[in-house]
Image (cartoon, rainbow over all chains, first blue to last red; front, top):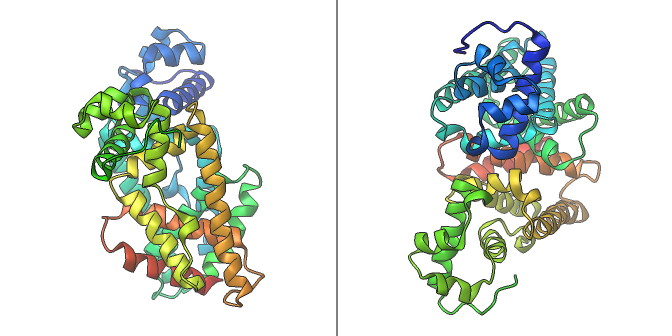
Length: 186
Length: 186
């Protein structure tokens, strides 16, 4: 977001992003510091400040890069879009960003300088997810009588619950089973 | 669990339990201390130690009292049991224990003296939830071909997602809508 300079080396950038997510997942905002992220990423502190002027900006960018991008989903069919959506959730909550993503649910609203962006991102993601289902209804793939909210809450919540409780394997296959189960309801 | 003495006054006990959940929700294990719980509950520290010899025991008891009791659910019908289950989840994640319950997901596994009990409770709850669906299948209320895992993950995940994203109102009515939507799929 408010990066001080343009990232130079995408590989270093990615290492920093991953380190930021891991640290935030482990310690939350209470233990989140530029120095600790730099150490964990194996880069100098100066190299971090070259890219991000504050830890708020760093965490915001790291979250944006690591969390699902619902607005990019558009496969042309409702089933395809929902499978892609479920796979994103499974990958997020069963992957290396899992703890950071859950922490964000608890702390996101209360971190100054991060909360505003978090709220805006959430709103945008909810809007994009609703648009996916509405496109399906417009194309006649789904009855307009179906509750968009119920379908999305059970899809996203079901994927999240699976990621948090089951061993992480075969996310794509599970996403298909989940979507077919729910489209059967709808 | 390992209370040093029997609770004397249930009202005081409840006040302490609530204070423990609120504090754990706000600060996580890092800020969880007997003194802070006592202050928040408006009781003396001695009064706390009379009941719980360690903060691990206090948090374990507070969680046990505040989180869903799946094994108590047995209304006689599958639909009734699932509605009760969904209501418990909605009440937990949209109520005053919400942040503590989510924190438990992130930190539960790593708190010494709490992790073991948390793992056992989780296992017991998953077992009780599966038993609910299996009883329904035995009574012929649900096809044995339905995936118990998918039904429970979408029910519990869907209720949790609703609690975390929608304004908290009408939990019982929402639980009925959710269950009817999913039983339609099954």
